[in-house]
Length: 403
Length: 226
Ligand SMILES: Nc1ncnc2c1ncn2[C@@H]1O[C@H](COP(=O)(O)OP(=O)(O)OP(=O)(O)O)[C@@H](O)[C@H]1O
Ligand SMILES: [Mg+2]
Image (cartoon, rainbow over all chains, first blue to last red; front, side):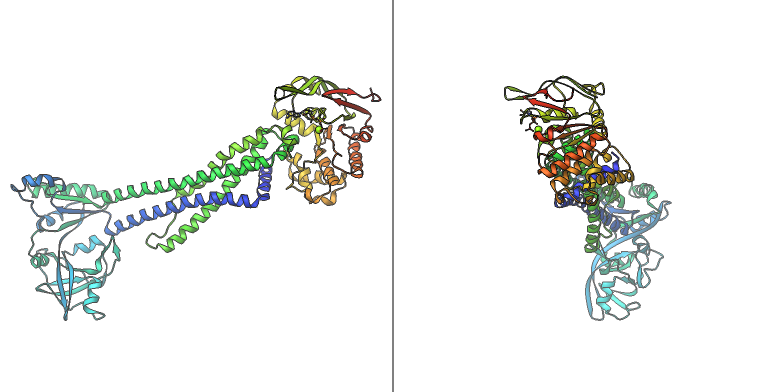
């Protein structure tokens, strides 16, 4: 018998019991769609995290004062040598390093910002012109801090869009004066909003030159230093050279911490991938359940079609042909389920993406798109084997006598 | 063509052994027309299943064209059934979801015929049994006599040399029964061998060679052709 005829006969018998066929296909489709949807969600979450990190800059290095590993020790040694803060000169010393593209020192404090009788408590960031490059910020109006001598406390500031609107409404802010704490600054620019990244919003920021912030908050030490490597490939070498320079400047004491964006990101990615895989595996169990359903349905089918099987044998069908016929039915059921499931999964992911725009575009990763239907057809055939073998093993004489 | 030598078929029922066939010897030549009669449970169907290679003897030998069928595997037996033997059953045994044409087509499908050749053959077969206009009807849309005619067309699909009919008229009224027998006898006229199991003595006596079964034993009826 040709495979096309086997297919034709199998299709014919599936069409003869439309409700049973539809329900079985539905069960398999739900399993496949569940795998696709859940992996799409997991993948969407992963992509979201990666995107967020990327918006912070993927080849970024953070230098923090103090060393995480010496915290236990510092109790004992704290009396002898206090932790040296990171200074503006430390930051400046990193500027010329070959693997380093930009260095931005940061001082943070909060202060009241006043303009025309309106006051507002804001986070004030002391930094330099390089901060904008490092953070990939764009300007809504005006310009960012002027480049030049880091030690010069120019009386200029840049406002986040929310602060600017709160202080000046719709009026033009650039060129106006504001008071920050007890000092006066001239607004030179307004940041373009970047939206929220990990709950951080640049709209509330007020940025002043780092030397001005140091004077404002009467603080020498830096909150941290942002170092942008030239690219991801040079990140490791940038990290090495930054560490070498700072160690030398701190007389061999590693009283600072170096963090890379990549290390954090890799951890997040690993966790999210493991989660996606776990969830997909749970969903794949439903494929097994659907496989058992196919087995049941086919066992019922074999039991009901005993006389037909006997007849086929009498007409000269081999055991192999009978086996092939029933296996083909299981295969078609699971294939139908797989195709319907892939369609439903893709549709569902599209809808879900529309509902969760942060994660959009949502689609299942290619491995899931291939593995889920393959697994569906595989389990269908595997579980179809038992009924098919039972049909093939029937004694034709007994089969013919059953009515 | 067919030779049964000391063939027995035994069934164990509880601790008893039933001799469905008991030391049966039989030779059938090509072109013969035999009827098999006997009381219910005497072993007629068992004999027919055995002749049709659906069953195997527990004792004795069955030679088909001189070849010992005990030595043939499932594929060989299936091919012999497909190409050399046609079955007609008391309860028609049509596949309910297939049309008349679909049922007649089955043996050709199993034998791997290409579609156009099958179509042409199905049409001729249905014409031969007078059902050309019922090709698209499903079995439940046909009368008993029509169903049995479809079954006969199906049995003849691959032009078998041996036709085995197990009470083909058992479920039909007399008129339909006679029509069916006419069709089957036409088969003999074409040079085929026909073995007809029947309860109806009138029909049974139309065969030139008559066999009688009792308790699994086979007797040649007097008046039969030697
Ligand atoms: N599967 C089986 N298990 C046990 N005994 C069986 C089996 N099949 C047939 N027999 C026995 O074999 C004997 C012959 O049965 P068979 O069907 O050949 O009779 P038959 O002559 O065709 O009867 P009928 O005219 O009623 O169709 C019977 O006694 C029956 O009970
Ligand atoms: Mg019988």
